Structures are given as C-alpha cells and as structure tokens.
Length: 121
Image 1 (spheres, rainbow, N blue to C red):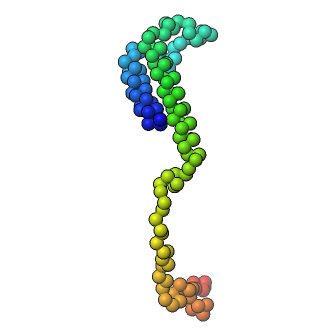
Image 2 (image 1 turned 45 degrees about the horizontal axis):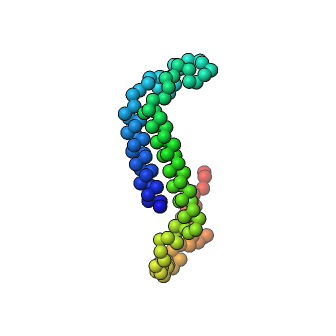
Image 3 (image 1 turned 90 degrees about the vertical axis):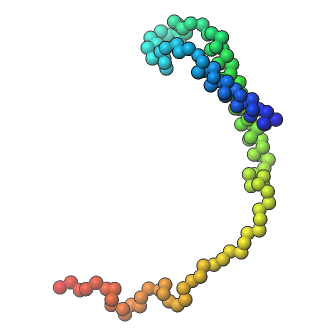
C-alpha cells in the first residue's frame, strides 16, 4: 500500500513540475505592483484550465504527503528502527588498553627543584 502511494506521489510531483513549467507567466511575480485594492481578485483574469489543473495536482500532492506521513508514523509506533534491523551479533570482549609499567604517569617528587622557576633578584 505504501509503495503504491509513494509511486503516485512521485508521479504527482513530476507532473506538477511539468505543469508549472508549461504555464505562461502572468507577470507581476510575487504580487509586486498589484496595487492597493482591497479585493485580492480585482484585475485578475479567471482561472484557466491549466491553473485549475495545477491546483488539483497540488492538492493531490499534499494529500499523498500527509497519507505517507501517517503511514510512516503508524509503522514507527509499533517497532523501533533497531528492531527492524534484525538481531545484533555478539559483541567482542572489550579490550583494556595497555598501561605503561612503572610510575611514569605520576608527577615528579616535591624535592625536585628542576621545575621551579628561578628566584627573582
């Protein structure tokens, strides 16, 4: 079921891209220079068949997007991603790093004056 909806979704996306690219530009991109009329449809021609097709494809695209989201949410609620991956293999025994032998990690003794700064004159 999910694969069928996904294929329909992809076909809608491609056809929506094609329909938008085929349409003729009506000018006034992004509503620039639209005037100050209170009626937003004033001066606008009625919707053409291509514009109605674009709206229909857009609504169908949004509907398939929501449907795929709902299906994915229902599937993820029943199991985890890790559950779907299968059983994990036995981990190998953890190895401890080799530590140096002796007291090389200890600070120098307090009677060693080689690290103290020279006295100020």
